[in-house]
Image 1 (spheres, helix red, strand yellow):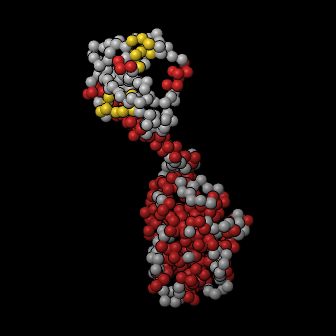
Image 2: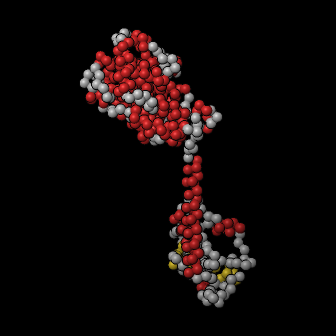
Length: 428
């Protein structure tokens, strides 16, 4: 029973009537105590029921706030946002220490409302509301942060220890391999030549160089020499021509002599000079070959221990965890670059990394450069794109034109028919 309240003189003691309590002025207020309502009415008022025609509360922050049937209630399924949480804290969620009493009129014509504060001051209510808003915002920020951290943990890629499997292999020198390649990376500048050295050659040009190297690739394949021999041969030719002007009649002699020196440095069984003369259609004598050999080693100051692209290819292929198909395609792409004069703009390590990156993209059909490859090559995907696009263009025209030695070599079953794989044109 609601009786008179000394603290609220505005409320008069109601009299008992059917269906509720009759107050002053013939108005009805909600009945309590022994008066009971049907369960359906209670449920309708609690869940989904229409708002009362006149109900008002007094808030310390918002002042007097009228709620009528012109303002629909907030839907339960509305997503919780920070703004919505703040509104809920101020308007929809009751605070401890403050219980507003709502007077309901049974007349639809009258909209008179009485605002009553029961227990608690405006400052206390404001404090609770402010604390609830701050706690709600902090909770939402924490949830967002946890989701971001969780997504980063899922997408973060680990760097694989590629030398762990070779710890017990003394030939792999796993304890020193990182130091060795750090040295190779510093020393590769000594093996590079100016990308415009042909400007000082009056009788030969870059096209003649390409013809010579394309022919040497076929000779290398016919003699079944080691891969290291081919890359050192090309390096010796470029370094020698960057210093000594040479006539076109002696250009083939330079190539044959460079291969002889590379074989002496890399091969176990070295081809005899007569075999090289025979393969060059006896254009030169043995004395001419030996004289050119002396001139070449003296010009290069016997500096034959230089890091070539092959040195980096082996390391980066291991980092990419390659199979035979990726290996064959990578070597096919980089041998195409040996013929092209413009690829002298790139250091050997970048050529090797770009060849493997291009081969990976070609085989899987989309861009891929793992964190492990980036770590061991020290090149990001963006740094490789320029060189990789040039490699794709060489791959497209590999079987056309006059210089088709590399394409024929890698069109055999020995190299997995790598030359017949479609180029990764999407990189262009």
